[in-house]
Image 1 (tube, helix red, strand yellow):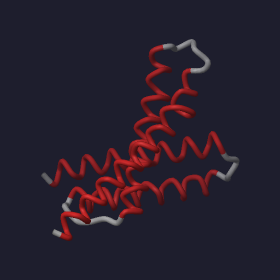
Image 2 (spheres, rainbow, N blue to C red; image 1 turned 60 degrees about the vertical axis):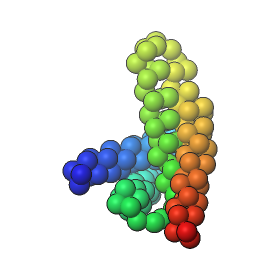
Image 3 (cartoon, helix red, strand yellow; image 1 turned 180 degrees about the vertical axis):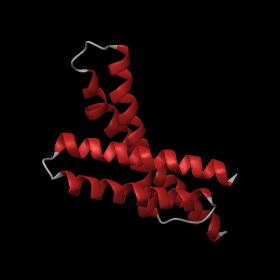
Length: 127
C-alpha cells in the first residue's frame, strides 16, 4: 500500500512541476530560477497534502481546494496540451486547447472537488 501511495504522489509531484513550469514559462517573463523555485514549491506542497490525504489524515479546506485545483488543472493541461499534438501533428492550434480550455476547466473542477472532499471530512469528524 505504501508503494502505491509513493507512486501516486510521485506522479502528482511530477505533474504539478511540469504544469506549473510550463504555464509560468508560457504566460510570464520571470527568470528561470524563480520559475523553478515556485513550481517546485507548489509541487512539494501539493505532494505533501496529497500524501496526508491518502494517509487518511485531515487537510484544511484551503489546502484541499488548492491541491484539487492544481492536480486536475495539471491533468487537464497535460491531456489538453499533449494529446491534441499527438493526434493532429500539423495543427498549429493544438496546444492552445490545453492552455486556454482544458487547464482552466480542470482547475475549476478540481477546486470544487477539493472543497467537497474537505467539507465531507469535516462533517465526518463532527459526527
